[in-house]
Image (cartoon, rainbow, N blue to C red; front, side, top):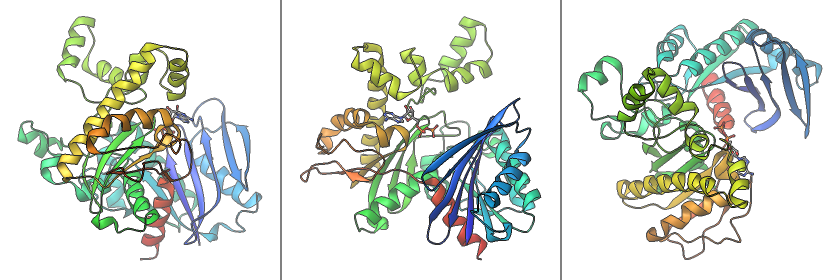
Length: 396
Ligand code: ADP
């Protein structure tokens, strides 16, 4: 059975078509610069990749081209073969603790949550509507980044110490993000080591351009670093992570700006980019460090310290940690970042083998046999979780 996993952004649409339940990827790719003068799409199939330039006025056009290409490229014979389409949704708020069938009601909730994830949720709905138009008889599923956190976190973890009515009136609380990834990493660690996830205390470090840490206790999210929005937590490519909120009013006064502008700078001009004044890309910072650039080193040290702080606090929260898993663009690919984090965890009994901390793109252990905590690199796979949930819910 063919299942499509979709991740729609405001100007992009990523897709992966699976043969399920085998979890075989038949093709994957990306439509970019939707709504701009000129766009393009990338198709990956059988180890090859091709790019086609074409104007993509809106998401519906991208979906039409995608479906036509699947047939033209002999990936499917008929559109009837596609039995479900799963959509990644960034913000499910308080409403969703699981993936859900797309209905008028669930769409209304996703729409209501646009305030909390303005660019993302709006784009997801546009994607859903484009598929509803193109494949009216196919079931569609929402898979929420927040559902895993919402299912697991207790009020003491998700409540902020703010006036209580902010919570009841406006839904101000921690929702987290990257939940699909954290859930996958925890389950995958258990599978790879032949253990039961419901008996394990795992810290997953999803460190990409966006980055978050999660305490996965006995198969549930106990706490996570992102908050009401992805701005909370550790410093990222362009996001600041935690700061004293007073900074916002202070900069507003000093630079005669409004809070929205300053928060935008905390989202888009801070983190790696802001501190280093070099780049938001980890590879550029590592290159600069190799050339002796102290600011680039400081940038990654600030992040490593904050990540170690979270891991230390999760050690206390879960009364121990069995495993720490690194994932996403930086976590999966940067031995340097993994090392400067692990070196700060010696007090917890963490010992890594530098000779093992070299791989990329595949799961591997790089702790020593006498390390008190098992340290792994586990590439994340959010799309396969989308495909699994879509298969499960379309068969219901
Ligand atoms: P997003 O949050 O946008 O999905 P990714 O998970 O794709 O982000 O991560 C992007 C980050 O991964 C960038 O900072 C990039 O520099 C980093 N990255 C990718 N490959 C490497 C590498 N070989 N070494 C260090 N960092 C890498």
